[in-house]
Image 1 (cartoon, rainbow, N blue to C red):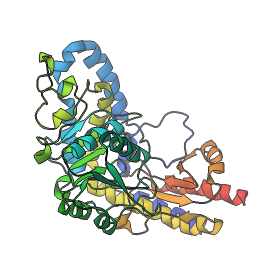
Image 2 (spheres, helix red, strand yellow; image 1 turned 90 degrees about the horizontal axis):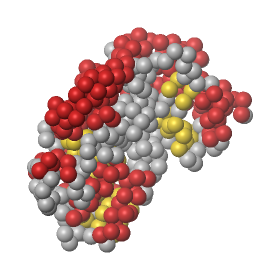
Image 3 (tube, rainbow, N blue to C red; image 1 turned 60 degrees about the vertical axis):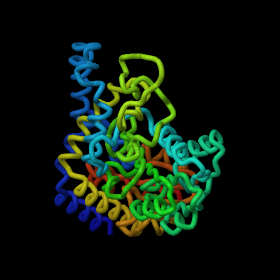
Image 4 (cartoon, rainbow, N blue to C red; image 1 turned 30 degrees about the vertical axis):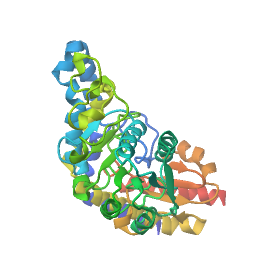
Length: 409
């Protein structure tokens, strides 16, 4: 039984068109990791990133100093935003910027959205969305005297269009959901939810943190209004890498974000009295762009462009499908339950396994070089990154987990 699953992993690796790209990632000497299964939390670094960072410090930063701002740094939020939009978001130019953290951009866009909908006092969200999304909207509701309408979602699945249809109405200003649920990996029907919300006159906002770089996103085709997401998961931007924001072109003159800073001014270096927003999505900026933290995105967008998001998605479906095979054969008899969608078209890039007592295994897993992600109360997320994870690596990781469960039993 074990041998046929290993043979399957080896066959899948041999047929994987993305396999050569794994060599582009940094593998440190003497590393102790045999199976990294947390690419949905923090991606691995690229060799090109290491080279670009050193080159930037030695040549652009040290060599050009303050002249770097006029060499192009000031345009990076929009230049990289446009490239990200084209490579991974299905967004035309002039609608995406790189700036701030996901939390800050969530606040900026959500506040702008509700302020642009006077007379509409309700915001719709779900109970199992990522904590930041919920906390930010709770804060905005307190600031603006709004009512939050909570949709109860099953942690094993996620938001359904029918639930949205039952929750929105003529007093709904905004709906906010995650495209891929952080806990279960449920892949929402974004286009249909947008249609339902728009029919009620509401604006829509999507958190793409667990989607971007893993599953195809088509913001323009979906008629999405607003979106945010991080760049340190499947985009391998590094710890604390800046986030991105999408503001649909025809809304850019209507929505005004609340944190007015000099970089969002139409003439930043005139430094005159009064705030006048820059045209387009640049008005979403506030403070000085995090230039050093943006450097890795150059390399990672090159990699994603080379691979193509369709090929990334195809491998992701195979990887998570293989996780399900191993879970059913090895782990289900040991009391492990799969709490992620089994239908590939409804599954994002990770699979969540649940069993009481999983938390007690984390130290042992890490000690043996297996790194998954843990989510309370009893879930382990298996998040293989299609560009850096092999099928054999998944086999090794879940083999260790099985052995630990057998010993625990």
